[in-house]
Amino acid sequence: KTAIRDKHAALRVAGRNVLARHEPEAALQPLEQAIESGQTSEKQGAIATLAEMQIPEATTILTKWMQRLVKQEVPAEIQLDLLKAAALKKSPELDQLRDQFEAQRPEGDALANYLESLSGGNAARGREIFFGRSDTSCRRCHQIRNNGGEVGPDLSGIGRDKDRRYLLEAIVAPNKAIAKGFETAVLALLDGKVVVGIIRNETDDTLEVMDAKGTVIRVPKDEIDERATGKSAMPEEIVKQLSKDDLRDLVEFLIQQKQKPKGPSAKHEG
Image (cartoon, rainbow, N blue to C red; front, top):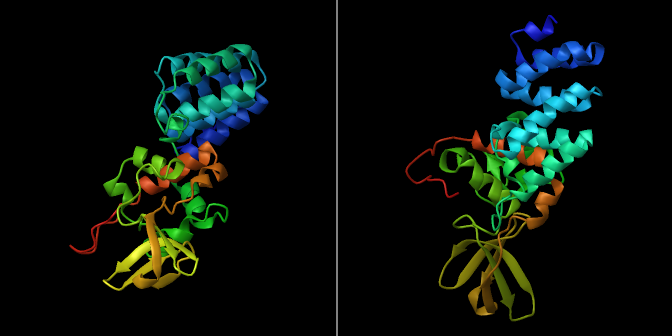
């Protein structure tokens, strides 16, 4: 109870969770109040706690919020949390409400199945995904503040130039809007080899392309049999490695990258 009154949100979240385990009925009001008026982390923590509670009143609270979600009356930053909680409860009424929500997803929108990942993420976790996750390897191709690779755009100022929707779409549907200057060139050579990469420099006689490993390959033009524009160098399957929570955290981390260009020639091409 002391923790619930603490000035730090993280401690308040933990306090409500402990109270729910020891005195479930006493925790209901603090949890519901946290969803209504707490900080984002408190709202999310309260929903997660309610999902774990085995008393009917917890399911009733979640049902009320899911009804509001179907009516589009729920803040964006807790929509994903409510959907996850409803799935964990395995309540027929909650399942029905989830189905109603799914039926409302907009058709023809590349982000239709991911809209609940636009807001509410944790930037610290997003940073760990960007720099630390080997299965996504974001830093292999992108850099932030001189940390990372150069195959893709520098993302140091991406949050200043782009909005959340752009960032999410760039991850889940990378070929929809390829960043200017980062289109992939596919070169079929006279000797039968194929070179794929991003054009880094072009003269009358040669092309310099950077492959996915960051290696620059110099190709004489008289050795090129055919040249075509390929897909984005950003792998489409990367979204398969990321949960909706991961996506939300990545978007939150990237939207906070607002470094200004160092000079007039350093304009961000995002």
